[in-house]
Length: 191
Image 1: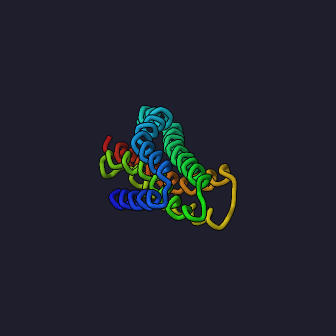
Image 2 (image 1 turned 60 degrees about the horizontal axis):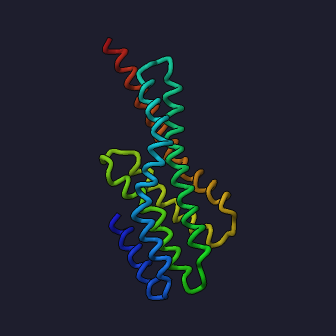
Image 3 (image 1 turned 180 degrees about the vertical axis):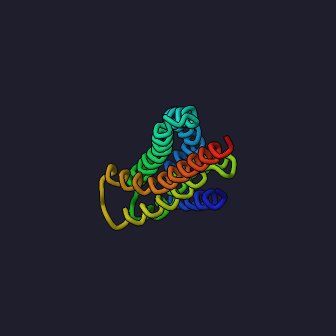
């Protein structure tokens, strides 16, 4: 997170030198507000399926529902990250000129990733959100490279980012299934 912060400060200083102070001011306001807003969105939409998954986890007849709710919960989190990333990219690229394109790319990376880094830093270390955040940073950089060479709509870019974000979601689902199945086998052996 410190490297991201340094990158954001350098990009903001670069834009201030160029004279794009409005973008820097709006970015500062967004950095302050966005983590709380995105955390609330994830709490509202992603935690309900996670809560259902935890409630039915110990009931063997509803294991599939637990897996489905876990998948939906993490997918909603990935979708929120993807939509946020594309909204930031689209709003920054509208204001880009030949003089400001590079610092805006750098600042868009900072603006897209820093809220989730702040949210993830509040969690305990063996948390999936840390992995998802790291994956989002890599996916967003990959998307910036793709969008530098290929022009596409925001919807297509969101879908691509969301599909890239499904890789750690599926890995998390597989680890959840393996953990749950091994735990239930252990409990059957103990009884």
